[in-house]
Structures are given as structure tokens and as C-alpha cells.
Amino acid sequence: MQIWPIAVRELRAEARRGSNYWLRLLGAGAMVLMIGPVLMDPSLPPAQTGSRLFYTLNAVAFVAIWLLVPLTMADCVSREKREGTLGLLFLTSLRPTTIVGGKCLIHGWRAFTLLLAMIPIWFFPVLLGGVAWQDIVLALMLNGGAVALAMAAGLLATAFFKDGTRVMLMAEVFSLLLGLWFIRAHYREFFGVHVRQGNIKATQMGLPANWTQQQLLNWYLHNGAPLQKLIEQFQLSTGLAPNDQYSWWRWRGGVSLTINWSENWSKTNAAFYQAWLLHVGKLFIESWLAFWVIFGLAAWRVKQAWRDQPASAQQIKVENYFCSPRYMKSLFRGKMARAMNQNPIGWLQQHSWQARATRWGWCLALIIAECLIVTDPEIMQVLRRQQWLAVLLLLSLAFVSAGSFRQEREMGSMELLLVTPLREFQIIFGRLRGIWSQFFPALMVLLVAWLYLAKDSRVFSYDPGGNPYVPILVSAVFFLTLPVIGLYLSFRRMHFIGCWILVMLWGVILPAVLCFPVMIYYFRARMLVGGNQVFWNAPVEVLLMLYLTFQFASAALAGGLLYRDLKKRRF
Image 1 (spheres, helix red, strand yellow):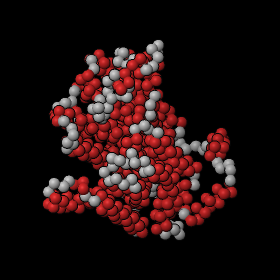
Image 2: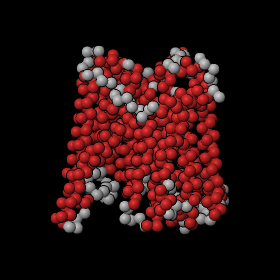
Image 3: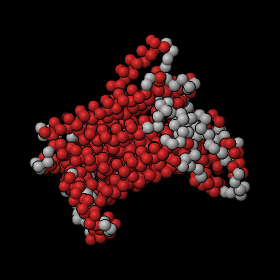
Image 4: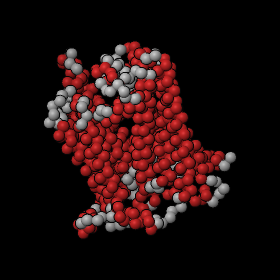
């Protein structure tokens, strides 16, 4: 078969890539780290330890699929476009489906080996007991469907885009959209089975008795806070739901329906969960059918755009109409001219309309997310969701900084920058200013919302630190330090996924590890003096300042190494 030469070529290239081994190690390590907190939870009954650990590890695997699998597929074709070797493949007798199929086979195998490294740890809770066979079947089908759509997201990005960083970013965007569709489809099928079997009735919720089953299902899916619905959809797709997480209509009509997997096996009849598993099996098949449709679309796109062609007159006209400045043009040109004179490296990152759209797109996304958070009726969960929003923003910041100098290093334009009159410090600081300015509007939206929420005592009433301004300080410090670490690591010849993960390990985990001996010393001192004092009575401000000090020291080390490499032309 013609697919094997491509597959063997890709297999040899990936076998020599050390980042694949580290990726599997990190995937398995993330699951190992989640075992300790679950086993040490004092509020968890021993009989539920196995099932709770299984659901926790299943949630880690589910998130890892949507996060890492698209990145493993994202650069398989776009790298050939950037290096100019895709045209050489078309000079042979290979067809577009053969080229895309061979690359998809090997890079899909990379994703499978990642899951293969997680499976032994994933099934460790089965030995502890409490895990039903339905849990295993449901988890395998849901994660299998997620793998299909995550691979499809990577294929879409690599077929329609060329730039390395943009390909990775769009792969995550497509993965997010397909993931939202997937968990919503599962959520709809789950409650659709309840409605069709008569477990949910309109009269029990104060609705007209003549409503059809479809009207009742649509009413529930669209009624309530959108963010709460999204959280319920994720919990249902992973099993990671509290044991007392019942649907809100239980209080109105006496209906006790839960999205917790183990309680569904014990409190519902066999007909219900058999129908549920059957619909999840259909969703699994639909996901793989969608993968093959997107595979055909990717092959068609590769055939149409395997060589660079100038934009058509219609494309230029549309771009000029929608993407060119239309008002206050002189003010805009003056601003861009000053930016080029003051910071030419930063100007390179924001002079195009795509860069400006990305900058304000992040800001718009944060505004929409904040609106969903502040309108949620569960005011006590606002702080936690605000923290997760900050984590997502910092992950995006690390994502962009990890690929900042990657394109210049691969295309050889870094040598051209170094022969200009710009000093090494100007190149570094110019790119840092470019990254900071790209995320600054979004960060301001996050911090202003945090300050607004700090006025409500209910939001921070259960916070152990009791200081609503601590997360604001931590987010601002991460905003300053993570890009420095990302710029240094973007010079290393490593895979983009490994570089991104290493940025978070260096910038977030390493300072915490350095603080750990001090925390242990304080804990032992408190135990010797007080005898019955607990660890969390430690001064939070002291530990926080120590952590931020190590954070700045890590960034200073990365900045010094980056300056040294530029000075000695090591890249």
C-alpha cells in the first residue's frame, strides 16, 4: 500500500524525537500526582475511595485528551508546508488521502501511546473496589469518542493553517468547540433517556401538562445559568460529580435525579442505564464518523493548497474592507510609526490585523466569561471559577511565549535580527513588551472584575487566607514572569508541547518546590511549640512573599540565560 512509505518515514522521525518519551512520562505523572490528594481526603468514606479515585483519574485523562491530542496532530502537515517538502511528496504517485492518512496514522499512534501510558494508573482504582463494569465501559466509550474529535481538531488546524504557533492555537480552538459539542450531546442524551422513560415529567416542575417530551427536554437544556450547565455537562462526561449533586428540580417536584455515575448504577433500573450506554455508544460511532468526514476535508484542503498561491482579487477586497482601518487613519498610522521607532521587535508582533484581532479577541473572551461568572446564582462558587479563569489566561500566556521565537529560529530570521543595530537586550525586552501588550487588556478585565467581586463579602467568606487581593497580586506576578521563561525555552530545540509544559513547570511548580522545605520547617516548629497546632496556621503572607521571590528569581535566571545565548549566538 502507498500509505506505508509515509507512515515509515513519519515513524522514524518521531522515534528519534525525545519529547515523545517526556510527553508520556508527564501524562502518567499527572495521574500519579492526583492519587495522593484523593487517598488523603479525610471526608471521603473508605467504601467510596475506589470510585472517587477512578472518576478523578478519568477527568484528568479526559482533559489531557482534549488538550494534548490536538497538539500532537497539529503540525504534521503544516511543517511540510513551511519546509517546502509537501510539493516533493506530490511529485510522487502519492495521493492527498495517502499523505494525510500516513501522517494521521503515526501521529494518532503518538496520541494512543500517551493514553497507553495512563491506562495502568487509570485502572489502579479497580483494585481498590467500588468501580462497576458500567463505569469502565462508559469511560472507554466517552474517552474514545473524545480522542476521535481531538484528532479531528488537529487535522483541521494543520490543513488550513501554516504558521506553527497559529496552527497550535487553532488546534486548541477547534478542540474547545468540538469538546463543548461533545459534552453537550452526551448531556442531552442522558436527560433524553430520563424524559423518554418518564422519570422527568412536566407537572413535577410546574410546567404545562400538555408539553411534549421534546419541549420538556429543550426547556431544561436552555433553562438555568449557562456556566452551571457547562459544569454539569463536564461532570456528567467524567463522573467527577459530588455525591450530593442532584438536579435543582429535585426540590420542586421530588424527583431525585443525579449526574453521579455510581449513584445512577445503584438507584436506577437496568433499562435506564442500558439505554444510556446504548446512546453513548451511538455518540462514540458518530464521533469517529465525524473524524473521517474531517479527514476527507483535510485531504481536499491539502490538495487545493499544497503550494503557496497569491490571494485572489476577491480575497484582497474582502480583507481590505473588513480588516483595514476605516476611521482615524492618521491617528492609527502615527501610533504604529511610533511603535516601530520605539519597539521594532514588539511592532513585528502587533502590526498585522490578525495580531490586533487576537489581542482584542482575548479581551472579548474574558468579558464574556466574566459576565457568565457574575450572573451565576451560586455566589459562593464565584471565587473558584474566577481562579480557574485566571489559570486559563496564564496557560494561554505561557502558550504564546513558548512559541514566540520558534518561527524566527526555524526560518532563520533570527540571524537577520542579530545583525541589525538592535542590542540583545532590546530584542528581548521588545518581544516581552509585545507579549505583555497582547494580553494586557484581557488581564485588566480579569483584575477589574476581581476588584469588583472583592466588595462582596460572600465571595471570599470561605477563603482560608481571607485576603481578596492575594490572587490579584499572584496573577500580576505571573503575567510579568512567565513570558520571560517562555522566551528562553522557545530557543531550545524541543517540541512545542514539551516547551509549553516546561514553562509551567519552571514558572509555577519550581518556586513551590523551593518553598516546600521552609513550609516543612515551619510545620515542625509549630508542632514542637504548640503540640496540637495545624499546618495551615502558618503566616500566609510570609509563604506568599517567599513564593513570589522564588518566582522572580526563576524569571531572572531565565532572562540571564536568554541574554547569554543571544550574546554568544547559541540557538
